Image 1 (cartoon, helix red, strand yellow):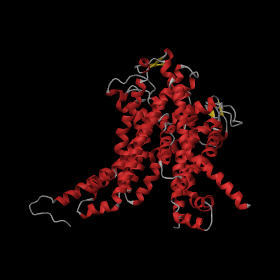
Image 2 (cartoon, each protein chain N blue to C red):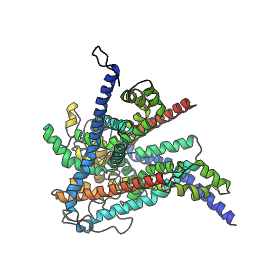
Image 3 (spheres, chains in turn green, blue):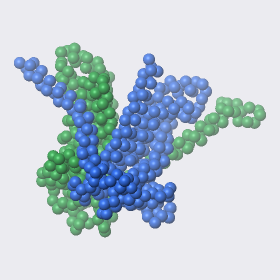
Image 4 (tube, chains in turn red, brown):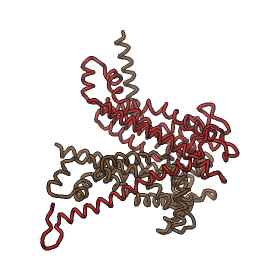
Amino acid sequence: MTKIPASGNASPVLKQLIFQQIGFSVVTALAILTVLPIIAVLVYIIYLGAPAISWEFLTAMPQNGMRSGGIWPAIVGTFYLTLGTAIFSVPLGVASAIYLSEYAPENRLTRLIRLAIINLAGVPSVVYGLFGLGLFVIFLNFGTSILSASLTLSIMTLPVIISTTEEALRAVPQSFRVVSVSLGATKWQTIRRIVLPQSTAGILTGVVLGLERAAGETAPILFTGAAFFLPRLPNSPLDATMALPYHLFVISTQVPGMPIQIQYGTVLVLVAFVVLMNIIATILRSRARARRSW
Amino acid sequence: MAAKSQKITGALITKGIQFSGFSSILFVLLIMFFLFYQGIPALFDVPLGDLFSQRWYPIESLYGIVPLILGSLIVTLGASLIAVPFGVITAIYIAEIAPRWLAEIMKPLVELLAGLPSVVLGFLGILIVSPFLRDVLNLPTGLTAFTGSLLLGGIAIPTIVSISEDALKNVPVSYRQGSYALGVTQWQTIWSVTVPAARRGILTAIMLGLGRTIGETMTVMMVTGNAPVMPASFMALFMPIRTMTATIASEMGEVAGGSPHYHVLFFIGLILFLFTLAVNIVVSRISTQQLKRSERILS
């Protein structure tokens, strides 16, 4: 304990401690003030959205100008788009990460690749939409379709998948590779049999986080594949599709007289989807850490 | 024989992996190419003086993009006033002060905020934030630049928190121990040792957060009122505006391909792209400088 001098003035140390206590309280309050709204938003959405959720709401077609019925085509559309994005972005992203982690020399070109990845991560989502419109819809003539939208979303998702996968690959100790190669395995065999299996959970975390982002995006699909309203489900990758985020945008801003119940229900479905993917990613990540025996 | 076919497969796979590695560069170049290819004709369709004039009214072929640029800047500035202090303080709290269990609760929540689709934030903005602001501030409409700033703050915060937190965690423990050994309190150590040591990381976090903000589309389109008017004064923060991103998103669906309007929208996209490119080049400069500096210290 610090002794308070007889003069009556608080000692500088005590003063500092009081100061620290006040500072900590203020910082704690601000941090909680930052995080609390997130909980509030979740509770609010669940509380208001839950009554709207029914089997019919999830599996029926929209009716009466989307003012009644369900959101089935939007759910299916988001599923297709996410699947399409996974088909293109996962192989390319993982291969790209393997290159950066296992092959790339430390030179100018590699630095340029890294700069390109950082830059891809920073391109505004609506600019991806413009790019997809220019390249896939018009130039390659895929039209406004699931294919164009998935390709656009794939390129947007690449940086997330590449950077998390690379991190997972780099976490595998160098000695594992050395031992494998010394036993006569080729570089590819080492990657295939040793490095990839050891980093699966980490890679999957990145894939799930990337796809979560893609599934929630609206701006990149606005002019590349999203349909305002479709009376039927898409039949082929060259059809346009409804999608949950775009549907939410449409019913909350573009359709007058939209029952609030349907809006709340749609928000809940979209948020539940995102939260679910987030939880999967968190579980995978903790598993990746737990499995690490080295 | 088997060894030979293995060798060939291996070589093919290696080529494929190399190509994938370079693909990111290819995509950046492709994006750039299409933005230039479709955006540069705007400079020939619309006289430069008109393009940088103050009136955006495409129906009468008035394509002044200045109000849109200012709209984006106002919203981003407002968002930074919210996101920077709250984001950095939250990162300091999680990294330095919070008990472990609380930090483990807060981190996933912040990540969840990062994952929330921007339409969801826009929806909440329309339903909760905007009526609230209208009533509290006594405004004619709640769909203002400020509403956008508040919500975009929420979009920038996860980026700022997680990167700043990493930067703070990367400050060697010995720095803090040295400081404590000199009799300095934890509070003083945070502000005079840890935060300064992590300042480049924190700066990176702020820049990337704001880079995300200026490119945000759906939220601003839904809550800022969509009025492409020149912000006249500081009070413009509490009036409807229109950002560059929202303009592209709301008008691109209705223009004829190849029209001047179409090219101008691509031109706006090009400006946005070049802006984020500049931010990212500066950021990667900062982080490589940091690397070199830490290498110097360690050697």
